[in-house]
Each structure stands twice: as C-alpha cells, then as structure tokens.
Image (cartoon, rainbow, N blue to C red):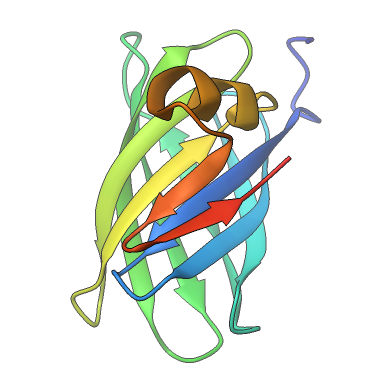
Length: 126
C-alpha cells in the first residue's frame, strides 16, 4: 500500500434481504470515488469520505435505476482499507458493506465461511 490516491479496494455489499448484492471498487485514500454493479445488473457510482482519524466515514451512491444509498463505515484496519459498514437505500432496503482487498479472509474469520451473508442467501466469494 502507498499513500497515493490511486489506491483501489474491493467493495462488496448485501442490499435488502432478497439475496441482491453489490460488487465494485473504491478508489483513493481518505476519500474518493466508487463504482460497481448490483447482482441484477444495475450500475452504481458514488463518493466515499473518511470523517475522522478513528476511521469512521460515509459513502453515498446513486444507481441507474434511480435508487440512492448511504453507508456509514468504520475501518477495521485503516492501512489495508478493510472496512465494514451499514446503511440504507432510498427504497428502505438495508445495506451491509465490506471493503478491502482481503474481504473473503475477513468474512471467513468472522462468519466461518467466505460468503456474503445476504439474507437467507450466502453468496460465495473468493
């Protein structure tokens, strides 16, 4: 990892309780852009910002279907970019988010399997 703004980290999220998930990337260090798509093909883009030296921050996203969302996150390990967060879409769906380049290992260690725990569905990741 470097201090450069060209840093890129994986972003994964569960949206709602119906097994819909998001996969994308966050760019930057301290703040930056994010982009990706929902499992139903809806594209989403946004911005994220670290709010304080404790590693708390916020990410805002807008999707091509008109939905908007906000996630509040906290870094588990600031240097590697590993973060977890929760939020809500404008339609009321809950968002649970994980970011970092070692998300599968993080989930394996915390949930016992390398899968996104999206509602009744466990979405395998590697």
